[in-house]
Image (tube, rainbow, N blue to C red):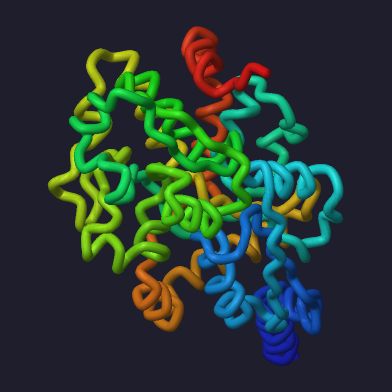
Length: 346
């Protein structure tokens, strides 16, 4: 009799353990089965934001129980601010909408830029597929073939940009303050594809944006010398740019160096941010974070990104939260210096 009771107890315990291990998966599968998840991309088709989103959309279903469908919806404008504000204010926190926008917009909140309608810590941060470090590139027709030529140019060079909060807008402003580079920002383009066309038409001299963007849009042009990289704003030399000077090495003094480190390097780690809206249940955030981590190790995704000349150098959701928290805790004196750079006076 004692043995029978003991056996029943053991069996019951094993069943409970089995249920404890399987119930979250079953719950996840039942939740996402036959569901569609939207990725709202704060940029136009053809650029780096769009490229990563579409690759992720193809491979993420394999890493979420229930195999949901992912669709990409481009919502360009204001350097991703439209998507960030929309995700914060108007998207239902049901785990079915992901916002993909420039995490550098958080600096806009730090310095009090106009148009910021979100509170960054309330986003549910999923992660970043790769760090994006900037390279300033120029057309051959511009005549800017080196950093020395840029510094000594008699007139400001015309650089294309979308809007405040994007790396192609913010990075040149930091470089201008830290290195005293002459430039004129021509903002208002919807995305990278439009800037590319404008540069090729002679409307722009160049652009400062992620080196991956140049690799996607101008790979052959770089090879034949029609597009020339003259400066990289990265902690260390990027692949293929070992002879191109680093902005941090040209920054003289502690303040200029800190401007480059915070205003450019830290931004580079958070540019390609993915987030869920405030109030999304924590269990759904964890599902997305785990899927994001797993998909960025997926051999099929890695093969596709390699073919597309895209890198994978991820930042986890937890790391992303820490970076955002650090930016929001900058001392007031330094925030004042950033404000003179980032806040656009009408």
